[in-house]
Length: 236
Length: 236
Image (cartoon, rainbow over all chains, first blue to last red):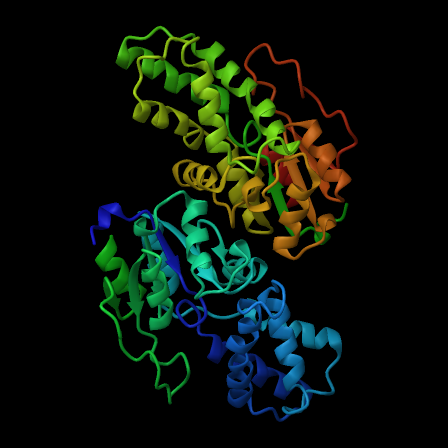
């Protein structure tokens, strides 16, 4: 890969840019304290995220029409309310909790790394999160995106190819002028299949201390980096 | 209008944020010098821009399918090449000239005004320019957008209502939580018809020294301001 041919760097967000699990746990822990609840925060975070792929799959396989992630997240939350002892919460409180996905904290290397990369390349999220989620997250966390791309703009969830190809098309670049950055090997397989370059950034604590997936690059990716600082070192 | 209800400020770009006419004239003037041409630069800029509405109208009225502005600009350029003595230019040179619309300079108050507004609101272009044009312009001119909205994302040219409504929908806000900012009264008429708030920023030299249109607010807009500094004074 010649760095000079690269125009845009596209980023997976959940897990790659932000620590969704710790952020969700932290917010649930605050709920426990403020409302005298006894939620198993880690189990709840994992169960909620566990419904992420199954609900998107209903959209991918055409069994339901295009639906944004905020709505899927809310349906998953509703499905878990009784099991985790949240059934006393009002609809407005559940709406607010659902938006915790807009309030995720970045990994500590992310803002500085993106800021360096932005000086040389177009940077954008290419996430399954909806546009409002990604914009609100960026405003709060200071993620300095040039623009917001991803599933809602493409009306298609990763890893379906149209999600990647729509991003390149909107930027008026070839897929080969893009690098997809992700902490998930399967995201990179799909991006490479579309002709994009690939960078794996390892996030061994995304799923907490017992993580077993994506602990190392499983493909011959163009770049493998420990964090966004190391990624920028290789690209800038 | 209560400022506290506002979440997003959406900006017309050509004329409102950037001085397209001086920028195009300046680039043509350089071409005259570098290639020994004798283009009437102001007449050329006005003629090129003069084809802007007619070509978009073909898309609006359905006589041609969705087509991005870069393509419409290039067709308009091709139509003017002989008349203005550019017929000696290569295809690659015309492609480069066509991208002058990605290289327009902002009015001097714009970057500072947007930077102030960005601290309080989501800011985005809501322009008929395509995404790549707006991203490349922003990178070069330092326009600090939170995200890029507009015609290409909506697949619909202003002043058709879907162009405005799609922007609010993607941001997951009501039209009434948005302010449309433009130097053109007709843009604000359309935005208000969609339920958006409106701000007129006068740009009396957009069309050069002989400008006759949009020299003053023709409607009862929520805000009327002389530049983006005055706009930020009223909103921040």
